[in-house]
Image (cartoon, rainbow, N blue to C red; front, side, top):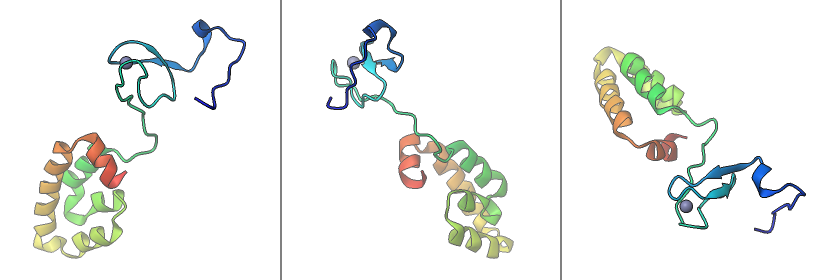
Length: 113
Ligand SMILES: [Zn+2]
């Protein structure tokens, strides 16, 4: 509350506001929780890795570890690539494909974002 800039604008025309999905109260855009009902506000994280993209890469190109390179694990990706002829990486990648899909966005972002 210390950085609040009280401009001459009336509350009705302040641009950076949003509505609490839980109670519908008008909040400041940067509010992490709703002061009215305490609900945590979902803040979109820009630039995070896409769970769906990683899952699709694991499914189609997982046998050569492309999804690992995508997720910033080049050493693991290289191992997949080296052992691709055994088809074991393809099997692991398929399991990872399922894991990625079952993961929540939050869990995925915490691990790979
Ligand atoms: Zn609320």
